[in-house]
Length: 365
Image (cartoon, rainbow, N blue to C red; front, top):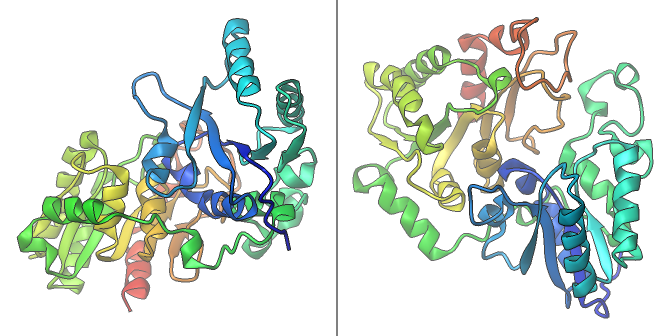
């Protein structure tokens, strides 16, 4: 088990991605903090042009895990941009690199390691320089991996690559906590409203920005009607981005038609962390493979998740026995496509409402 190194004063952590990417890395971030308790930690991450803060800040704000951010344009080939980044890192003089980036191939990992060495960072932890560190199935091929139990969640792969720092405690709920503030909880309660906040509730997020992950609003509408009939006396929380409000209302019509309880449409009204506070009130969460799903799991709400075959089984599933995932393993599983035309999304369109309802029944017991 790793020992805390209090001599390290500056740690650079490298992680790219969106909301869900940072949520699954929470145990690894906390492991880093335990390993270097006296260090200032800055994160090198992607900062979209259209926003003022990186996606990481939407998850990590107020946790004390990271004290600052350096921006990186993913895939940049700009010599000037790389020189500016080199100078920013070199000038700060980090003593340790903690590499928590996704697996993008051995060539990319070697290139990254060289770049950080040029920046003066000699101690590098977690850079996936072997095939086993890149893969979510311990270096086996997908064919050899066989059953789901042999496939590794992304959170576990990240933690394994940082094992020299110690145990990431993936099974400990505190490793996933958002450390929500009283103000964030109050903002969520205010948005939910007095009529709803005192009732038992069910949360749902029906939106997705990725075509291959979309189960379809008609399916969600039918499912919510079934859930309203089976579990009366519950309120419904609609969670998602502002542009998902209309689709969410379409789905909620099924709930209302079957006599479901009051509905609170929170789409676009809360920050991601405030949305987490709202979902912490729910008995279960229902949704796609998405940021809201990972938020719900982080705050301890059991998830019923409808997954496409885009990713490997278990790679991005919420971790823990309380969750229920509906996933059809078709012959093109793990394709990593954003849009599926040739196969017509058969991995997800073949999932029926009855199958998902069965998962809801199990989760509500």
